[in-house]
Length: 92
Image (cartoon, rainbow, N blue to C red; front, side, top):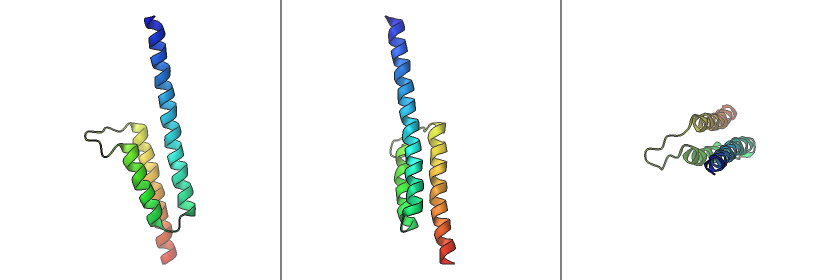
């Protein structure tokens, strides 16, 4: 009986991990699409700001984001920087 419960817990962990990876990927893709379609860089930066708060768990005191969450945060921040860089290039 104990062996069955251990396997079940491991399966739940794997499913939860896959779900998180899928959510991270979805966040990056949606932010990239917004970068291409947004009217202003402000829209992209606000979207990315909300995503970063969720991914990194910023409102939670003592939150320790995983390495994967930090990598996603870097990718999201890069998208926001790209949006700002494109707008300043068009302004010049």
